[in-house]
Length: 158
Image (tube, rainbow, N blue to C red; front, side, top):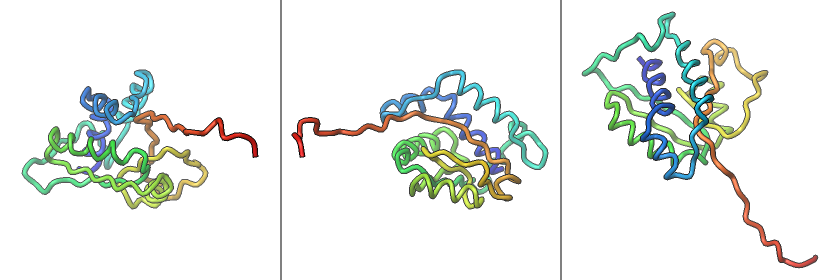
């Protein structure tokens, strides 16, 4: 069930007009259409016990499914808003994202301690742990953000 919940959450992020609006309101950009399509294609290959995840259905009325993520503090505010939106869209799933920094998210996902990670840092594939390789960790770009610097250009010499 958790695999289905994660699949559906990612699919919602990639396809929802509401997600695009929330991202824009929080100064994030959505991916170009071709990259979103590639990410959606990769989701089609997601399996749980050999069964394509998109073919699994939720058993309603059971305990809610918790998806837990850590990672990028830059994206935490965006995920906080999106997770509230998603709770209204899919009431069988609770998504919690604690941030902590990209390094934390990478470490947690490679040690299989969380369901998903957010990062604005690159992952070195050579460092994938056995657990991560067995779990078929996928890197799926979701949002774009600008990081800027303000500088005093007239400080003078010295």
